[in-house]
Image 1 (tube, protein in one colour):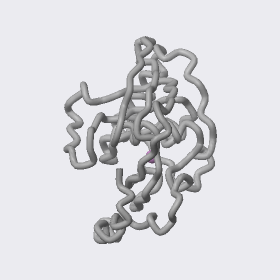
Image 2: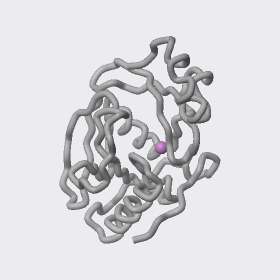
Image 3: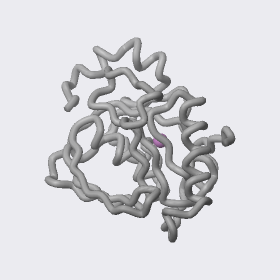
Image 4: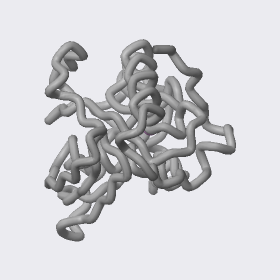
Length: 184
Ligand code: NI
């Protein structure tokens, strides 16, 4: 296992469309996932997509949280979702706006519109296909990670750039910034 370098906004790979994983069961895929997991835990993040560690493959790892406030437990492996070749579809057109951060945009936060409820499919490391639905915070996290596979970073989705800033300032002024009651 190895801790990998995380690409930051400005690195061209973050703007590329990632390649389909042809064999989710390969040792190579397992190695990528294990290195991504070590990297994610080291960085203290919630989720990571392979392009963020300079690997242009459709691989996402994400810890399952139902809200931002919920505490993240890296030791609980049942909380970890490993998605190979995920495909996302909105269940309805309803959108919500809420704050996001990203390991590739360190020190910053922005308010991003996302679908409130999605259905999604993916393959696991055994090659088994899964299908599920997600809503709220978890649906947002999946959409954020999936965007990395499409070459998109969350700042590209921000509609009101007044709601984009340094995390320490944003957190200090959260009540004021949320005043427009845009929150989902
Ligand atoms: Ni991100």
